[in-house]
Image 1 (cartoon, rainbow, N blue to C red):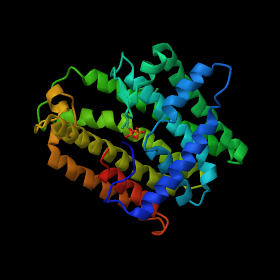
Image 2: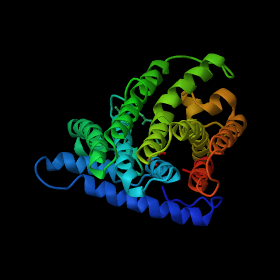
Image 3: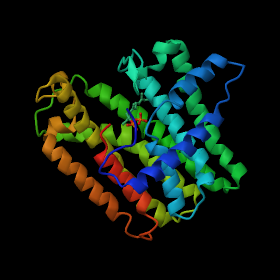
Image 4: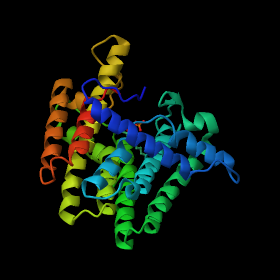
Length: 311
Ligand code: GRG
């Protein structure tokens, strides 16, 4: 279901992405050897980390590094670290005490296969491994102050300024009722998505730019690009959720509208949400204008891919 085959996306870029996601998968595979001790935890970590995702965050990290003149190999540990954080968040999000989901990426969720106890430990260990992985950048001759900055960016995206804050706001908002076109609703929604989704995409891009040796100005431009892309990612996700579930139901209203979950289509309608995503894509591109136009192609394509994706 995660095949990279949107017709609308350039075929040269598709092979670029396939090539990149293969290198990422190879690198991820090497980070957790399947051996004793604690074999079961390793299996559980690998189960989610290596399952079939789009690898959008690692690809953004590698592309940002290369844009500022760094090598792919330098950004790879950071790219893997970001995917570990992502995998950890997916395991936690699916737990019975959170969204209580049985399926993820077309397979049974981590706790369904390994049990809740092992799933929680696997999620914990993935966060620790992500920090360790980023710290190993010092072994690749990345200056310690850059490694420290990268770790700072990543940990910000996990805790009170990132995933945890976003998820907590999401939980807090569950019982709230919002009118259509409600300003408070839109602000609440924006807070959730900036933290639950955009923060990690931003960290991915910024970490790539830092370890690749980007200047402060370059890093900040890329940060702005990433914020737009992160928000856009979620707007598209919400639209897909509604359009997919309405196809499944054969109705005009999707499951989120029925369930009352706060989404962009709910607050602004499907058409306006699509327009908003396009506007964010345009703004994302504008932030890249300072860079060499030949070198920005991968990041422009990635943004297009996110806006046009069908899963
Ligand atoms: C401490 C790491 C940590 C998390 C605790 C559970 C939690 C807080 C946050 C949940 C965050 C979450 C699941 C956000 C949704 C992010 C999102 C858009 C997921 C889908 O991403 P894709 O489409 O998925 O990139 P694939 O499967 O392609 O990787």
